[in-house]
Length: 327
Ligand SMILES: [Zn+2]
Image (cartoon, rainbow, N blue to C red; front, side, top):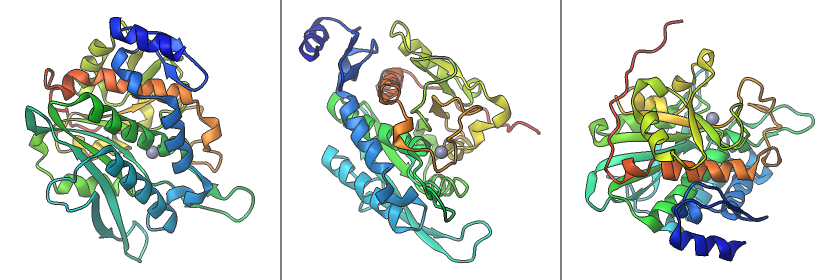
């Protein structure tokens, strides 16, 4: 099956090929570089009990930080403006707490070929809820939330390193999202937002969506034309993007995309999870085994294909409309 795929790749853009370990959807030839074996490795490592639920300020999240740094290094990313390493380190006192925590966003960069001063950010949060309670399973692994998103960031970094990019891409694993979008807010304070043409945030991309297989939904769809650009690029692939169907959840403002959106950046979150019925959300049961590797892999491929014209500088989404919904 694999060889047939490669043969098809040479002559055709649209392929359909599945084997046990590799998932190639109809998405396109170039997405061939995003494979489910690598996806599974990232996901199972980040969501392992060894990382103890990756709570900000604990040894568990430090292990995740080192894993992400090593991947960025292996891929060949450079560090972000003004930073000497991949770490953007800062300290904060959590809401309702007294003890200051020192933590870091992990940021890597692929400089653009022709538009290096125009940035696209691809992000996910690498923290989760840590260890809670005393009996039974006490580790909140956060496999879907958001080891799946970080897996996407790592896979897309490797992908764009191979295929090239006209605009500069900033790959960010944000810390302390679960404590109130702390890492992404800190990142937002340090940047010139006018340089950022788009924000692609990945959050919980491991479960089959309510819309069915080969679909994802986007938060804040109507707030810029980012989603329409993605839909245009996905035409003919068999993969569809829908507006966020869970309006009452106010999800646009509940993930890291909001920190950049508040600065005017068309910054949106992709998700596949049927969050209204997801029994594992913020539970110890959010384990790697509950996720569908095909869904994650195909969604990452769809993000690669869907954002292509933005990464290549052909499309520039409109700035985001900011008003928050009044309750
Ligand atoms: Zn999350």
